[in-house]
Image 1 (cartoon, rainbow over the protein chains, first blue to last red):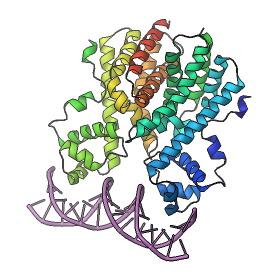
Image 2 (image 1 turned 30 degrees about the vertical axis):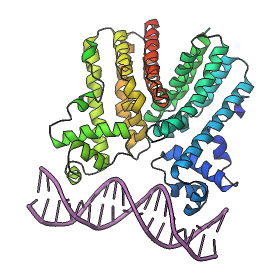
Image 3 (image 1 turned 60 degrees about the vertical axis):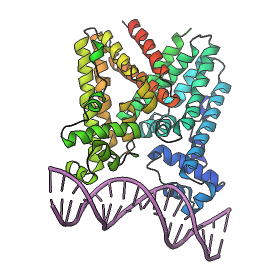
Image 4 (image 1 turned 120 degrees about the vertical axis):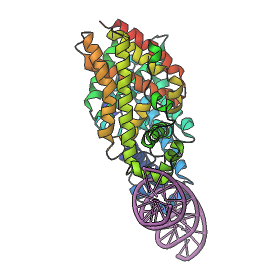
Amino acid sequence: MTDSIQVPGAAARADAGQQGKRERLVAAALEMLYQQGIEKTTLADIAAAAGVPLGNVYYYFKTKNDIVQAVVESHIVEARAMLAAIEAAHDDPRDRLKTLFGVLAGQGELVARYGCPHGTLCLELDKRADGPALAAPLMREPVDWAERQFQAMGRADARDLAIEVIARYQGTALLTTTFRDPELMARESVRVADWIDTLG
Amino acid sequence: MTDSIQVPGAAARADAGQQGKRERLVAAALEMLYQQGIEKTTLADIAAAAGVPLGNVYYYFKTKNDIVQAVVESHIVEARAMLAAIEAAHDDPRDRLKTLFGVLAGQGELVARYGCPHGTLCLELDKRADGPALAAPLMREPVDWAERQFQAMGRADARDLAIEVIARYQGTALLTTTFRDPELMARESVRVADWIDTLG
DNA sequence: GTCTATAGCCAGATAGAC
DNA sequence: GTCTATCTGGCTATAGAC
């Protein structure tokens, strides 16, 4: 059941083939921004990856920032889909939380190379002009979702627990990237699962 | 006793006044890279902040990357000093760990604005050519230090606990920055202190 | 050792033919 | 709607006078 759950980015990566050019550009941008970061990725990079001539990009997006915005929105859509899929697959909130962490930890190799797609994006956005307004809604998705699960468990401190579980993932992702060690994600996943089991 | 402990960056920020030009440049770069990020900070920015003409920068550093390297080394030196100060001020490893988290959490306002100085730097470095080799030694300082404290507590799982405590700080820092909410750091600091007290 | 002027490059963005 | 050619600005890095 867990097998069908896709992490954010997977869908866009999968069908970046033939569709509307706008969709191809967003899919290509999603990939390039993740691997290279916002600042190092040029519009020429994105255009080339999407198989679109550079000048044509500006027919779909007025500025580079508009593309970044579209990428963030794409991440939000995919995140919601993933969280909804987990909810559909499991009834017990404990199982849902453990599945979320497990799915994310399953991306250890990717995280070791490029970091968490959401975390690295949010930190980059935070140093940009309109960054915070874009980053917060993206990060709010998993935090709010986790909070609802802890509430369903009857925890009065659901918000703190939600912050903690997402913080542990994001922090472990950062260490995983810095040390280039996917093993960290796997170990932490087990420890988080144990921790969730100990909660009332 | 805790009052005299400075977080990394504080020393350089404090005496960026008059010294050798090289030191002034590194101190200015440390500040600018933290606030603006590596990619958005120009050599002109750094030169202006240090009160040094642009062309003169190249007498001290051959390339921009050399300045980045000097900044990372400066962070490592300051991190070691902070950790040594905590060790000198407390004998009990539990107190040391709680003090570390408390000192870092005390920077909540700064973290909300610009992120954790080490975390944001490491993530940026990870997307650069020679980044990983630079970032890992910096992040290893607090992790190894925390591991030694947990070992002194007689914990066989000291490494996992060290990863967890630093991951919780880094993850909370990321959420604090994204949500622009310093309160998150303060709450998590209390929760981590409670958690450490429950450990054998 | 210090600083001015500028070279050289490359990015984002535009003009305008088709 | 599509694409080529190009403009414009800003950045790293250098040349060379003092």
